[in-house]
Length: 181
Image (cartoon, rainbow, N blue to C red):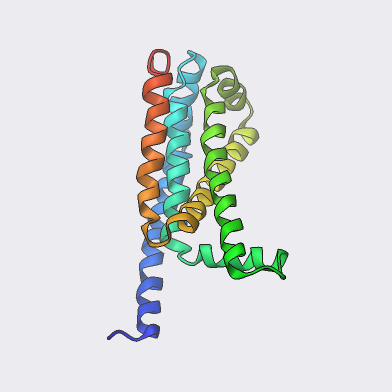
């Protein structure tokens, strides 16, 4: 049987390579050549590359949450307990789960905003807004990872598959005609 201390060190050893890989992927997604590809496509009215970036940032945030912040669900439930001190633990968990559902629905709805080519072109023209928008999308992914962890605990990794399939549904069905040039 493995002791708790050795299990913790194994998990913390695993986190550092994951953090380095995720940061490298993020830097690649935010690189100047990638920005130029996205901007050129947005100038033509094509939103496919911008959607892929949004999709990638969201998944990157979810993977970061699921791999690095393994106790995020417990933190949220404790936070709900602070705001509802006279309620039971079951109520705390239910409130956290309803909040998680709201976050996932919000993430899906906000993703539809990026289907507007005029908005994408406006954001491309304002570099500080571009950076803030991409960081906001990354944070949405982080919150999405917390939401999946709250809803499915140890099976939260399946939430990545659900998110990918939902995003693919939007890209394939709604935007396939005018998303790519």
